[in-house]
Length: 485
Image (spheres, rainbow, N blue to C red):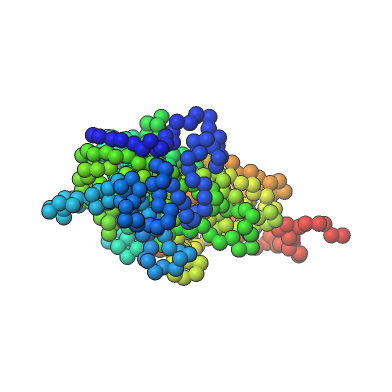
């Protein structure tokens, strides 16, 4: 294999382990601070990025201009997503391009990474799935993917899929690249830092951070240096692009995820020739094909279709400071919307460390039945509605109008809590993927990971009704404020 890296390419991993734990940490000096959905510009060689036009007749350094358009050309400018690459070889040379090209795309029936729609029956029940085991044999990100549930149809660009992964090998070790042509990939590491390499450059993504790789981009998920194994969750979003929510009365000064905290990579190129493999996800199917050249040969780029990372510890949580429990939508990081205003194909919601000061209030999540369907995961610590039974790496599903809520232990603790004292939730990071379509668990998840005893957690919720226990003549305020005489 021959490999030549650009002189101006950077090493993202050379910083001290004592790096700053903030958006400005030293290892991110070469990452592009910017605006989520905004335009970024990057070049690994000075002058490689044309400034006055997109496709000059004689591009700098003999590079090939190439457009990656994530939206139809006529989509309104505010929603249009695209990027211009300036690369050593055009992408047509990063796919099979000989007379037998069709036959070289080998259909791959992956045993655990599958796509909807599914034909088996899904009952209207509560589901919980155990964490997956470590790989029995060497597995990279693609090999170690297990689809827990999905909905919609990737060919129709609708719905999403909820996956988990466990890996102990880098895709780069196997010369393997991944091109997802059906949707965006949202990666949430649970254990082990990742090196996400893309055509745009590289991102180091640690637990409590997320990475978003836009559809159509070629990428690898590798173990970061010093990491021997990793596991986590990831979503395939088949619907519209993720956006950060409007803030409305919250205002622009702060709150939720700030666009400036989403970081894009700087250009980094390699010129490599060898026996590589491209894994393509297309119309819900996986295909494998041979590659002769590395697709990471982009010397310069600009656009707003770039992959990004986000540190979820920077999320500015909004909560009640008086009484009652806000809807979980107050913790939305990103949403993929439908054509109906306010209706999401998927909302990505997190439950980070925060203060909970609500007085006179049952603080855990209330019992509820929602029109939206919920996929829950736990990245770290405990979840307040299931403090002992929901473990990191596990998943739960509560579909459309299926009743759910806190378990018996949470009900007892929440009912006896002294709510005159604020409570700090720390050492936790749970998340939810809330969708308009019901989550359909896969046959593998139902057969191999299903915790069939999960609904029993509500069996210990006590009956409290007492028709003789009359309430006070005057109902007290949840948050009484000043005492009145």
